Image (cartoon, rainbow, N blue to C red; front, side, top):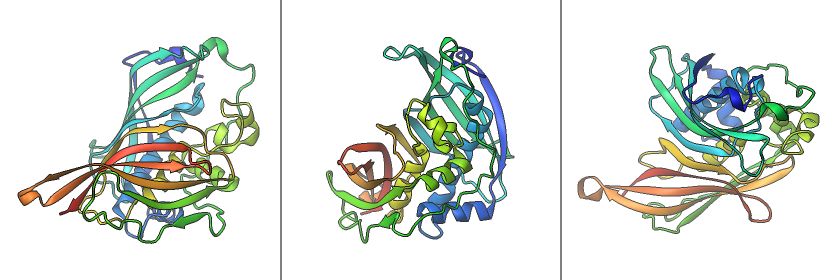
Length: 305
């Protein structure tokens, strides 16, 4: 089992080999709420496949304690059905936690490449790992490997898309907000998504979750983010997001919780001939029933002036 001490700065590795299939992509897009034919769906599906490869070949063979967020996500090239993807990683830096000495933080760069050796996706993030002397006496419950295919046993009403949330976004100003919809994360859905893309014990096993840092079954961070991205898709965009920055998960999302999602304009920059394109820097957020921000990230969309 890999522990914090094993992640020496400069360490590299390659793993994976997952094919993008039409059926798995279609079910993923429908299940998380992307509009039909959305090009954003396959980009986020690539992120989900990258995570699955990371979990299978790294995190479930380590003392992983989750991740506080994603520092940077960039889509460099289109992903197509039939592509076979693999992941390359490099350890950038590491440090031991001050408040939790039994845990260390490791900063990693993950690049997903296709058969032509072109980088299609890059993710940079911090992850948490237990140190060697703090390992539990017993190994955690490891999930049985399952196909990377997600179609949840969801109930009607779990996903609610707002009607016409983008009023005013054709001429955006700082502070303009759009409430895009909400989603209820039921236990069966949490486990279905995690079994497909993030099969770490604390997302798929209630008993393992109780013994983890989280204390109870909680949704994969990616699950909460792709729903946010799906509900924020379909706006009046000349160009959709090509990446995101500063993703933070401020608290776990536990079974039965509903999140309400919104996008807020941070700033607007006009560019191009006669300022034909307005580049909207926005903050996307998920809030719980107590109006606490559970997750947030920054991205940019282009709107015709």
